[in-house]
Length: 413
Image (cartoon, rainbow, N blue to C red):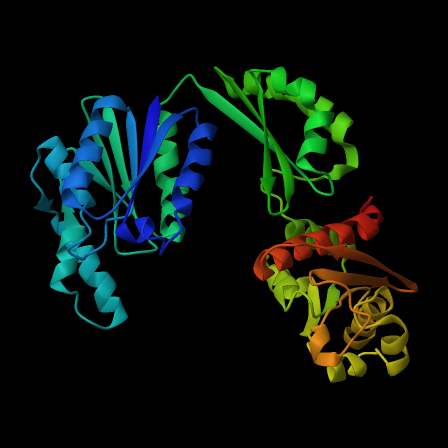
């Protein structure tokens, strides 16, 4: 089964929105044995939409569209599908009543423009969208399929997982695809490539290497007639990867640094406290995004000025002797966090703008120190990244969390 993706919206072509939907669907299609041959981005132009969809209809088994299902005049996905398939749009009463009830629940009448979201063609059935007003379409005709999904990623992800993926998988019998992603950190892409280079000669499983925000990933993909056979193909490759890469592997598949830290803390029945400067609250926010984060984060503070540093154990002697961006300062902040919030584990992240405090000891921009404290044990690490500020902070948070696991994770054994 061959597929292509159409990402629809002038805002994507103008750079106002980043098309994350195509990347998401591309990775998902591989998991169900559907071969992706093309990704197209197109604006809200009726002639261009028709041309691209009409061509896709002649060459692909499955066409996935994202976007263009809204209520405005430039949302043209439904109309284009109807034109390409030469079918008439009609209003489905049940859909219209559902839409009206959604708006009534919000306390105001439904605008007339939203009626188009209740339209359908005879070869399509609707795909529920509990997170928005735009239902999707699943079209089957002449042994081909068109799946029209909304543009907002939150709505699309839910629709894909709950509705579309099972339907496509059921129509693509006899193909089982299993993947396993090994996530590494602290090793370069080239270095990792050298460690596993013989495995790249394998066709099935296929091995890919990718640079991601949380390190370098190795992804093994095995295909077979059934899942059991695919699993047996993956097993020897996994053994070789683990043997060659060792402790540089920190996670598998959907695991994240924050989920691993949270899992460790839950097993320990403990929580962590944080005082951070360089990461500007991103460390606390990242841990705060995990389910039941209140069980693993006892408290956190973001500090950005000299007086705040003084309030948490960084005295003038430490500042003058070591500088505020130093291992000693980071360890002082970690200790202060542990005592202040009464936790077993704590983290302190240094760095404030050196020009604002005339700190002649401050290292180059992008440098920071992280202090870790647990009971009588306190230590620190230094790191430096170069990029834009957000990217640097994101990489710093990954480094901080993975080093936490490296230092304390053996307690879970």
